[in-house]
Image (tube, rainbow, N blue to C red; front, top):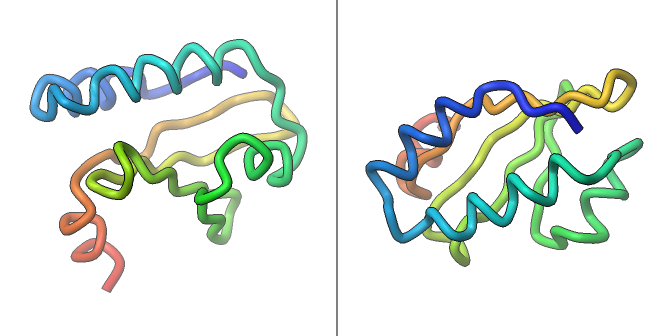
Amino acid sequence: MVLLGREKLEQFTQKHTNARNWIQTWLAEVENVKWQEPQDIKKRYAKASFLADNVVIFDVKGSAYRLEVQVAYNTGKVIVKWAGTHAEYDKRHK
């Protein structure tokens, strides 16, 4: 997959250094996989949540943080929309 919005992840890991290893592992996996449907993601990330418009929410570091991306399955792109704490995520989605 092609990742867009990497700078958002860099900003996030600068602020939340304890999530850096998880994010780096996730990045390496995303860049070396071809997701063709949501089930491909679910096989690897069982706790991922799927919203409208191909938005996927990943639990980072257990559930301390959330990563929100949009997946364009047909073009092989993953767009980082947002990353932050679980509490910040809850405020965004009230």
